[in-house]
Image (cartoon, rainbow, N blue to C red; front, side, top):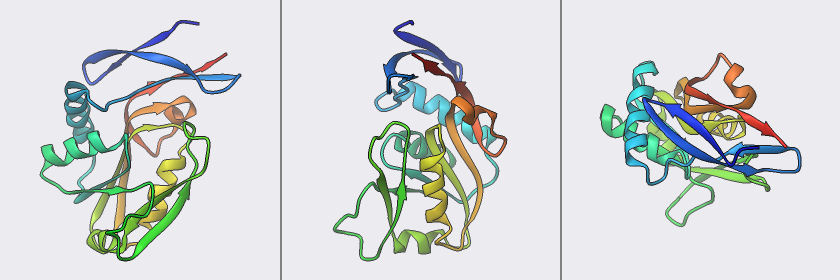
Length: 179
């Protein structure tokens, strides 16, 4: 098997390292953190595909760059679901999540004030990669705790079978690799 996968997305090309997930499966590691050119281009192209929205929500941490840049380009706010309770959260609301790239179950947390802010708004859920849909499902569960309307779920990449889904917006597929 090759050491890298060549990804073309938003008019750019990147070489992604292929990382062994377990004895049967490897993934191409897509990391936007620190890649400003890629983040700006992907945000631009996702905004072109997104329906009208009022606020963006993402999960900590790898979805933050694209959500921030989409917020900056659109002039709309964004909210980040944190991976744990923070001292500044007066009324934390917690859901559990299982991701393909994280061994243990993790939590996603929003302060109730963020849920209140989302009330009555059109919400766009954004992440870097949708794979099994675990993180996406956790974000949707948080959204259900407000009176917002989720208008779409979007990601830069749809990994593996996620690319077959017709209920998400994404820019490019990302294959999984059998060992």
